[in-house]
Image (cartoon, rainbow, N blue to C red; front, side, top):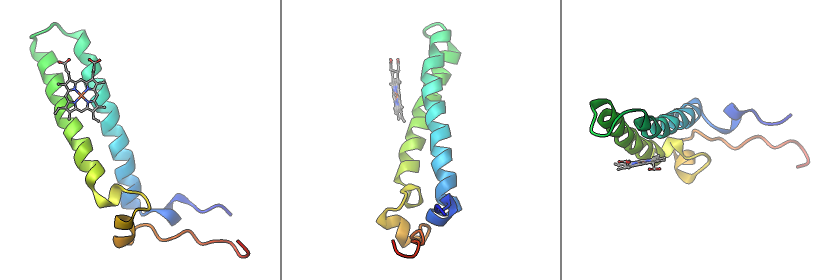
Length: 89
Ligand code: HEM
């Protein structure tokens, strides 16, 4: 049977992985939504600020050891036990 995601990575790593993707989508959405508002307007500036802040959040999330699937930092945290190999493989 194929190893389940939870066999390979802890819930923390999986949660951070999806959180990173959600924030990445928000970063991209914010900068594109600026086109809907006139230059110099308050909503446009607010969206740019959100873009910057969420972009920096992506950087911080990416640096977290638990967000690095199967890396040495991950094994340090014991969040990615090796998938059990089937007999004969
Ligand atoms: C995952 C992170 C990020 C992604 C995917 C991303 C993506 C983008 C995209 C697609 C644009 C539009 C480019 C265009 O004009 O067609 C943009 C614009 C821009 N981004 Fe980011 N960005 C990220 C993080 C950041 C961060 C952390 C900063 C600053 C602290 C930043 C500053 C800017 C600035 C100044 C612009 C130009 C805005 C304008 O038109 O005035 N970005 N970014």
